Length: 471
Image (cartoon, rainbow, N blue to C red; front, side, top):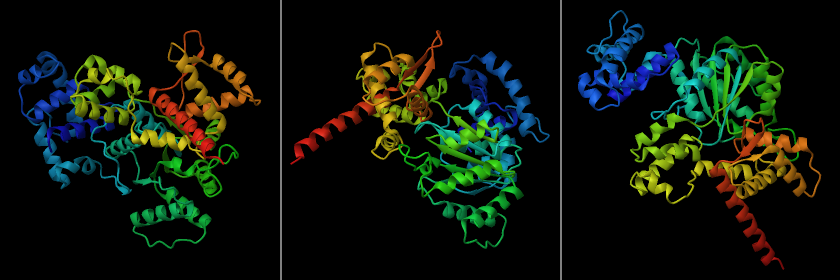
């Protein structure tokens, strides 16, 4: 185990036991202890002075770790590495897998995404730990690349080292849109295998679901369905059924998970909200939807990791890309390779870069039979047009409503427009905030503006082409 792996493992344990992450000075002290460096040399290579590290941070840190790692042994700078390596030996695991050995709670199926470069999210993790203890179903929604899957993977990692009484975790990516009968069959095979039981798989879907609930009642499982928005295949222009005809049974299953008694929890990640969850939550049922936003100052660590220069410009990038971790990592890599790591040189080109996953996600929203209604698309085009005319970066809701209604040929009610704006906000396509006068302001992030402009241009070009091709 190298210093980075050791600090990460200790950081996870501290969070599991104390509900907080290590501060940067604490990590510096740990690295010094692991590499057997003296405080003077450590302080010279860090932004913190020796008195802070040696006299204020270190003593409190050793007391904290004695309670978490010591097992009767007092943790000190000299003994830290030996204590951790002894625990690794006792666990009979290789060093790189010490996190899992420390927990012992099994992942019954699935592979967690790589979270070796995970940043921030302390409040979100603390909240999710509480929610999965209280609710039967939790949906995590957010834009593509915002870090939904990484957040859940980090949650599982933390839970496995804590005292939560889960019997196991199931991670299932369902981006391939499995039919309900096939998904339930897969879950039953996993659970039967974990119980070392022979599985007599029922033929009917209802019998399979009943058997699934027997497992969810008998033990405490955290079942994670990643990319659950793949199940939302209903035509939102013509039907209130969000799942569509072929996947309608999922709505029934989710309702049962939420309303029936059991001791497990279903955790979903999605780029779209589940409207039926919202209705059940308003009725007081044990279900919650959590929207994940971009990173704040924690995103600065991404630029530091990639070795970018011009630190005074880093916050400009965070604001432009709304703290989207995937976008920022892609951007940092591009700046390092093309602009020699200079953020200022990149900004001089005044361009917006877009990740493939971000563009693919918007394609799915905007395509002809996509996940946006005609009205929602019209609002996106209109808002983009109005923002291009304004000197600021936002427009008042009341102003947008008036201009949009005046522009429409057909009758569109105010309530319909407001519902469409709410739906766009829930899908992270529109941003909104309230100013000091309590006025609601609407805006779009630069990546979305670039996409909408490009998409609108393609529509015009295709229309001209079709017109010229007509007999």
